[in-house]
Image: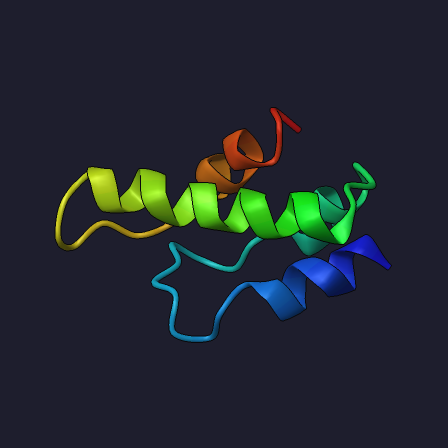
Amino acid sequence: MSSQIWQKLIPPNLPLLGKPDFAQLGAVGLTGGQIKNAVLNAARAAACRGDFAVVEMGDLKVGGLDL
């Protein structure tokens, strides 16, 4: 169920480097609110790298409380 929440909460226009491993992200069992915060934190981390930065799997892991 968590992997589906990840898929729903990552906006389709969010610039991603490759496809996230939703099974790995969902295996941790974060709540919907925690996943939302992880996505926002990942986007914020990518934005801090510059104008053309993309969100990487590592950003999602760090944003998700060090999965």
